[in-house]
Length: 161
Image (cartoon, rainbow, N blue to C red; front, top):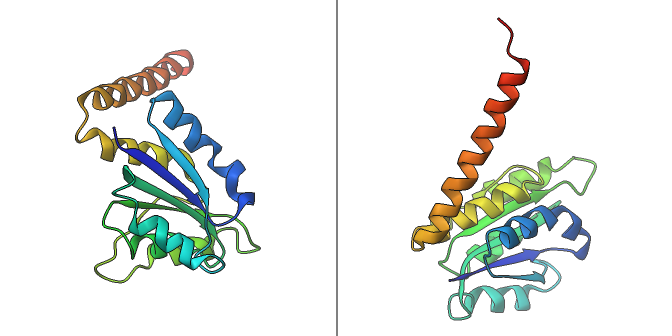
């Protein structure tokens, strides 16, 4: 199975990424975590990106706040899917990071989840990997069914009529 790379612009982003790590562990998806900055370590970020495919990665999750160029910098140097997570790290409450992450030029796509959306980033990465892994696809189906069952159970508890 291909690995998921999780790259964050700052170690301070790690607590916001723990939900992604928990989901990847629950689905038994291998992953690596790195701290690279698009601005402070551009050479290392580029090297990681350029070598991602040959190093066994199938998807990269890139999380950054404020200027949030990390996902775009990673995507510019690889053709494997990149999922950007805008991080709420400034007085703008993540809107700066959101706009920086979603406004990519034509030809360099970055899938973007909501601000601090680590859970959805992990699930999207798993969905991408599941295209070539039936066992992973079955786990996703089971997760969706369990989530639906929880909602229907809550509905049964509160439904009146």
